[in-house]
Image (tube, rainbow, N blue to C red; front, side, top):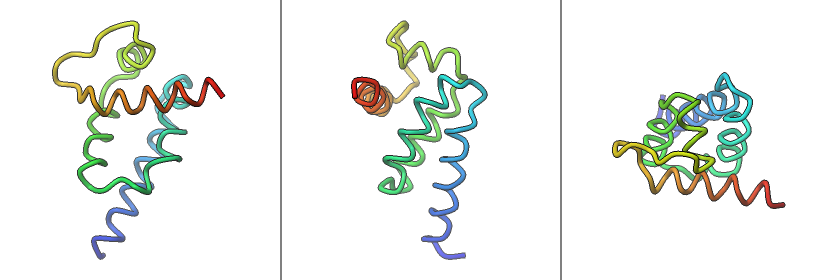
Length: 92
């Protein structure tokens, strides 16, 4: 398997995971975000996405909805990118 095939498989796996979170609300946040952006993500950015997706849905949804501040270990810049993407979609 080449590096290109490896990253393609990783993108496909993360896209599936984004759409099958366990809660519909997070599916509708992360699924469209991945559909729109994942093909542009390099390995380091996929790492950032994967770290965010490793968080549990209830607190993640609260962070996305700006109901709570995320803890210090969360990549706030990447979370803000997801939130901005989601807000742009719901405003359309």
